Length: 67
Image (cartoon, rainbow, N blue to C red; front, side):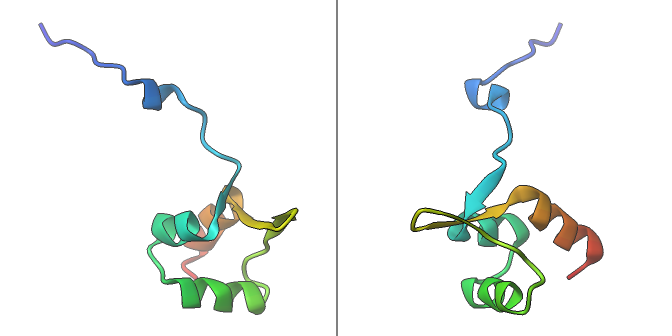
């Protein structure tokens, strides 16, 4: 008989948007490359006050297209 483990972090919903360092980690690119993609319009950002976030859906779409 195997036990099923449920960790609390497994129950957290996926974020709608992430900050720049997390976005880089998620798709495996460097900060400079991410800012390049933002500058050329490939990735759109959202400003919330002084904080810049990238919608997770944008990151998934970029990866699906193969940048």
